[in-house]
Amino acid sequence: MADVGVVGAGTMGAGIAESAALAGMSVVVLDVGKDALDRGRRTVEKDLDRRVKKGRISEDERGETLNRISMTTSLKDLADAPLIVEAVVEDLDLKKKVFADLEGVVGADAVLASNTSSLSVAGIAAGATHPERVVGMHFFNPVPAMKLVEVVTGPSTAPEAVCRTEEVAEGLGKTPIRVSDTPGFVVNRVARPFYLEALRMVEAGGKPGEVDVALRGAGFRMGPLELADLIGMDVNLAVSESLFERYYYAPRFRPSFLQRSMVEAGTLGRKSGRGFYDYGGEGQGETGQGTEDTGEIALRVISCIVNEAFLTFSEGVATAEDIDQAMKLGANYPKGPFEWAEELGAETIVRKLDSMREAHGDAYLAAPLLRERAASGGETAR
Ligand SMILES: NC(=O)c1ccc[n+]([C@@H]2O[C@H](COP(=O)([O-])OP(=O)(O)OC[C@H]3O[C@@H](n4cnc5c(N)ncnc54)[C@H](O)[C@@H]3O)[C@@H](O)[C@H]2O)c1
Image (cartoon, rainbow, N blue to C red; front, side, top):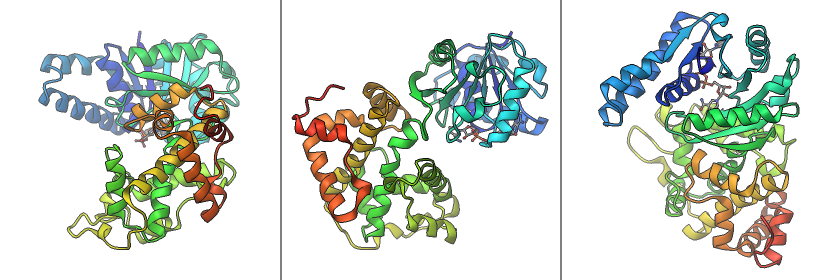
């Protein structure tokens, strides 16, 4: 009997299978054809080879890990798995069909989890015979290296399904946090200002190099613009557009015209050879005029991240501790937003947001709870 089933052997499915096998679990991976399964196996092999080279696992462990993963194109092979993670392409109708097919073969107690990033658990569970066993299990790329799993409770998800999913996440060596079924969950939502504010500064004439240096100086591993180049301008813009739409066009989520124009021009970042920086040689990032000093650049971006975290917490999406944990483990932030609020002072952050709002409008409206915290000298309960 398999400990875990995985549907989809792509980037995420292969990563989830590898993580489970590395943790000693037996895994069955389903995909539509042999080519997709072969690709998935090669993804796992490549990462295991890297681990052997780095001395993290032995050759024997590599072999044992691979032996714990079996691949199939037949749904029946998932029948006895107690938890199945769906990681097929991001398409609601396809996911609904996969869940309906799974419901036809799995046991009554099986938990069905989706790795969706941008669809709702509500939508995926709609039409399921047993929506109470449908849950979100949002992993981060690359799965074997990233510790965070957002466990998403949909409107019908049963508490037992949430607990079982958390147990499996812990068994995989991950840290699960509980989040409610809201657009972007925690990490993709709270991280959005990191990119959007940086893009706004460049639109206003700031130098990409200066913005990136300021944020690296504040402890981020990469600046937002070099990170956008790495992720791909098209992928990054698609996340922004999806959140903007799903938050009913809240001004703070408005995507960047500059980014859209870069996508239209094919300036996609590293994969196209040029984005904010030129990967063939010269740094495009060194053009333009500086607008704000380093400290102000970092304060502006961090203030918007903290504000989004307070809004997320106020809406009951996750606890403050979990939001801090999520941003450190899921986005590699040097500190959690609530830790920053404490360190910088809620008053400083509200002052920054208020001055930005005066100049640029409602995208910078401070979260009421953050303002309350500032007024009480940082004493508001978490
Ligand atoms: N890539 C990321 O960084 C990331 C991060 C978190 C979550 N996600 C989410 O994970 C899911 C998968 O993303 P990915 O990047 O691994 O995609 P991918 O395109 O790399 O892989 C998708 C796989 O699903 C397979 N597939 C398609 N239809 C299928 C079906 N009916 N049955 C079985 N397999 C089927 C495809 O053959 C392919 O191998 C998406 O929902 C995505 O939003 C992706």
